[in-house]
Image (cartoon, rainbow, N blue to C red):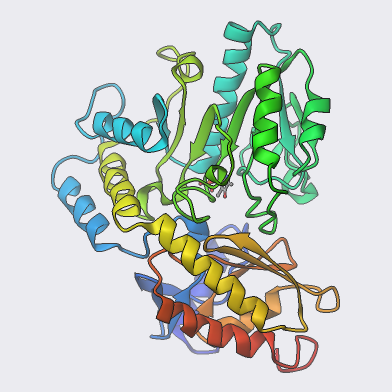
Length: 413
Ligand SMILES: *Cc1c(COP(=O)(O)O)cnc(C)c1O
């Protein structure tokens, strides 16, 4: 999709494409400013951001409290490395453990790194605590998962494009269908150390599993002494109408993997949170990261957590999300096959006749609303959780225009 000729947008996209590796295909918009749910491009056009950096911006763009926390820390100290202690890391891990109702925290930077960390913890727990024979540990994962892009993580992806050309891949993973607790039970062997899943498959098209799935998986795993690893990098921290999406059920993970909104879009901060029994397997030198637990990230993450709780973002997400999906359903668009989601994470599956969601996203962009297709056939709507009802109504008006217009086949889209 070509941008308008002669614009700053066109110029910036041209150098991005000329010098940047083309591992993404972004919409043709170049953002320069952001505040709350709103962003502005280099040519002065304003948009509502309904992607929120894949839920890294649950607190909105440049939340004033986070800006202040970041500024204050910038004036003091940005990086120490873990060779020394710093005065933000201790309070950060204490506050995050308390928020999660868990015992220990291991901070990293990106989501994929935290997933890798959880896998390392589970394997070492398997060998040193459960007694699995060396190099035999197995981890059960779900079809259609998304856990990041490193070599080990793509090794258990079921998306052929994620894997093709990147072998040899990491062994030790078994795939079961998502949403099927009996399949998890059937896949367990004496060498199984963990099950790794998402409470809702966000990248996979906003797939919500059947009610009771997580609770049943938890029971099965406990029975067989298999660790329950939940990736809440995207679904957690208020996105799905609870602080964590697994709290919709009576389910308790052994390790919780967090990232994205943990630092409200100011800094890459991720973490594995869990029991002393599991995170206790790490000895000095087993694992680490130069930037993991740095004081700048820790200071902004501490404030980011406080904002989630004090501004009641999970509750807002639940109420506004229910309202949003009710209004979407009431549109009765002929182009929509299904509307799925929890809280302010919504997937709109377009009908088979339409085929792909991209044209709708492009048309919404032209009307001032930014969102992105996921898994080709679904439009994902995931605005910052600080969005107001009026702003949501503004979005619904534009979505109604697009979803209820003639259709993507004609020249209109
Ligand atoms: C985004 C995401 C990741 C990867 O996080 P990065 O910071 O991009 O490495 C992992 N799991 C889930 C569920 C995600 O949404």
